[in-house]
Length: 122
Image 1 (cartoon, rainbow, N blue to C red):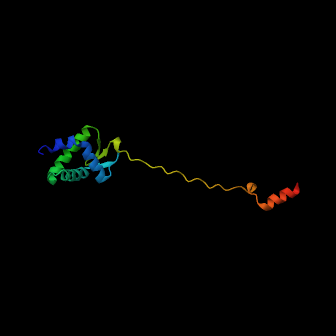
Image 2: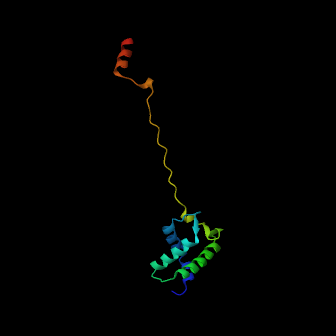
Image 3: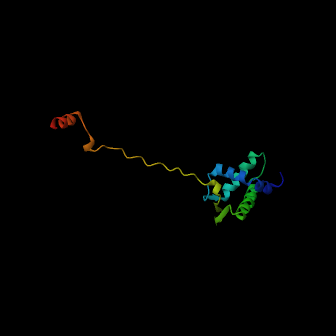
C-alpha cells in the first residue's frame, strides 16, 4: 500500500475508533501527537502493513493536519489538540439519590394496648 496518507484519510473513522480504544479519547478530550503516532503504528500492524517509526511520525503529522482542516482537531499548543468529535461524547451515568426511609410518626403507631384503651374509654 504505497499511499499511506490517502489510506489513513480514507479510513479516518476506523483510525479514530482505534485511537479511542487505545487512549480513551472522547469528545472535547486532549489528544497528543504521540497518541496518533502509536495509534498509526498499531493500526498499520493490524492491517498487516509494515511502517517504520519515522514513517508513522510523518503520517501522524499529515493525518493531524487533515483532521485540523476538517475541524475534528483544534490545536491547544504544539503537540496537543482537543478532539472535537461529538460522536465520541462520554455518556454520563447519573445515579439516583437514595430515597429517604419512611419513619412512621408516633401518632400513627397503634398497638393492641392503645386500641384497647381507646375502646374502653368510649
